[in-house]
Structures are given as C-alpha cells and as structure tokens.
Length: 476
Image (cartoon, rainbow, N blue to C red; front, side):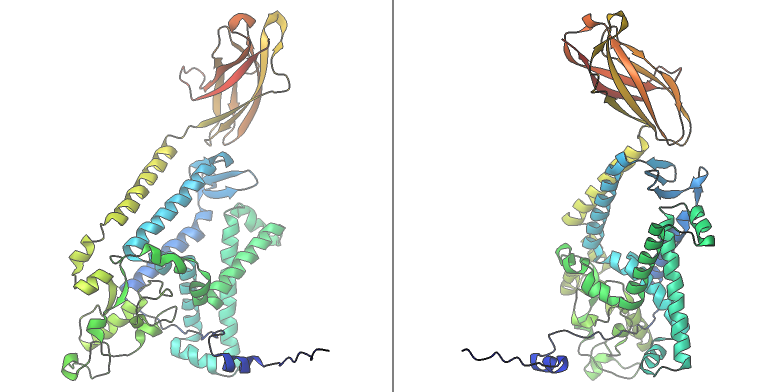
C-alpha cells in the first residue's frame, strides 16, 4: 500500500516570502503631481478638441436631421452631407487603413504621440484627475487623504468625487448612444426613463468602463492592457523622437544650492528632485532610460524644465530627442533633417495617396446607385406579339437628401424595349424597388445569354447618371 500524499497548505503571504516578489506585484497607487508647461498645454488642447467633437457632434443638425448619426434601424450612416449605406462598407475599410498608416507615420516620427495626447484613456484620465484635484486637493493632500482613516470629511470628499465621476461617465455613455439613436429621441426617453434595453445596456456599459479605466485602473490600462505598448518598439528606429533623459549632462545626480555651477561640485545638472517621477502618469523614472510604460506625454519634460528654470540651468535635460542625436550631439536642425528618412517618406507617401484617393472617390461618388436583379423564376418567356420577355427588379438608391426624378432606359439588343414604369420619383435618401419587363424580338439575337444595359438618368436630359449591365436570356 503506497504512502499517503502529504499536502502542505501555505498562506499566500508566506508563499510570497518563499518564492520571492516575482509572483506578482501589488499596485502602488500613483498620486500624480499636476504640472504646467508646453506639453501640458498641448495635452489639454487635445482634450478640449476631442471632447468638443465627441460631445458636440450629436447636437449639430444638417438638412433637418442630426448631422452625424449612425442609424442602425434605417441602415444608413449620416455624416453631414453624405449618406452611407451598407454597400459603402468599403469606406470603413479605407478609414481603418488610413488610421493604421497614420499611426505608423506619426510613431516613426515621434513615438507614442497618440498615447500621450489623443488616446481616450489619456484624455479621460486627464479629466478625471482634474476633477479629483479640484475636490480632494493637490497630490500631497490626496496622498494624506488616502492614508487617513475614514471620517466624515474623507467620506464627503470621496462621495463628491465618485459622484462627479459617475455623472460624467453616464453622460459619456449617453453621448455614445446618441450617435446611434437620434439625440432628440434619447432626450424624450430620458424624461420618462423609457430607454430601450440596448440603449440602457450601452449607456451603462460604456459609462462603467469609462469610470473603471479613467478613475480606477488608470496607468494599469497603459502598462498591462494596451497592446500598443508591447509592439511599439518595432516602429522605432535610432532617428525616432522619444522622451529622453540626457544622461551625459545630468549625471552624476546630486543636490546643491541654487546658483552653484554643477561641475564645480562634481555633479551633473540633475538635482535628483524626483519631480519627473511625480508628474509621470504611469509612475516611471525616465532617467532609467526608455521604457515601454512611457506614453510620451512630455509631463516629465515640463516638470524638469521648471526645475532647470529655478536653478538657472538651460532647459532640455529631459527632452524629445533621438538615439542618434544623443550619441552624435546633433542640434535641432540636424534632428529635423533626419525626420525625412525612407521609412517616414514611405509611410507619409502612402498615407497621402490613400487620402487623395478617398477624397476623389467621395467627390465623384454617384448620386444614384442601382442594383439589377433578374427574376430567375420566369427566365425567358414568350408574350403577346411573339416577343421574348425577361423580368427584372431594379433597386434604385437615392444617395442624396433631395427628391430625385429618374427615367429608366434599356439598350444592348436590336428592337429591345421596356415595359412597366419608366419614369418615377425617389424620395430623399431612400430606396425604390421597381419591377420592369424587358422585351426583345426573337430574331434580335441567337438563343442564349446576351448582355444588356440599364440606363438611369434624369428626365429631359440625354445624359446617363448610372449604367448597370445585366444579361438577357433568349430561350432555344
């Protein structure tokens, strides 16, 4: 009989001690210090721009309807003067390609510009941190409040902060749904709380994740959840601008009195104040070199520049620079010249070509679209007068938001003629289905399949708006 297996139950804390700290690292909450400067101004400019667009577009009107509306019920996407149908999914693919090439292009030039200035995670985190600072105070007060026991004051401040975050998150979710359901209908539903199940779901879903990501997780999203941080290095090269600490100038670090020449006391320009770490939204120390957690926001540059100004030293101890520029001591003009290198020229050229092609496609897009569906149940049949008839269904889409009168003509075989409605009106941004009969004398062609052309134009105009090819069957 085999010996019994002995199992030793080890507490989690003891397991960490036995196996080391590599098992997992508990989160150290970051209380980011606010900073002012050039890059902080750029971040807030992008916050204002993106949020004005996001929250403002659903309220704009165009042609007596919402200017930007992705109406899933009607299966139409309204974008100002354009109306896109499911058949226009090609433009969605083009938009994704443009976004990808723009990401490659700007990343090759200056690293994670998207992450640092326009990513929704960065934008909403900035907004949530601003609300937090207005209610709880600066980073020192927030740290003390975090460590303090729960009392009436702490409870009140936390309740106010969480409530403000919650209301803002719900409004963010409401705005998202307003892009898919007309905002006037949503407002009517809000007055009676008569939202549909999907509307409630998406308001709460998007609002909850806004609250969770921007208010609770914050830097954890950038460090552990965002895939971009993991593959960004393949887009970098030695001439890519990234946030960089000038180690040659800054080391060795050490404190000193204001006005003291660093080299006279055997230290570099870095006074080891730690402000670059305090203002970093992901809590890294840029002096340890480029790290995947760095989102390239430039907050450490603003913080360091303020310290350099106070100490009377030149700015730029932490700055946007390149690997080659640091190693070869390039100036600004040399760095700019190396921006135009083969990689960026290829990305930029492809991006410009795609943009031009897209603009040309939208500018020359036809106002009408026609689908011709031949009735396969009847095929070719003989009708009165000995003529051979094929039946077709025309689905004519009016791509504009005005009523369009159209006339239908057919050509392609001798003696061909059209029976059924030949002139009618199509309502704005609607589809009209019309059944027509095409008749051909049997001697017009040999038995079999022959190409014919439907021409849809404007009454009184010999020009053709749309030409659609199909086949006509002559039975044997």
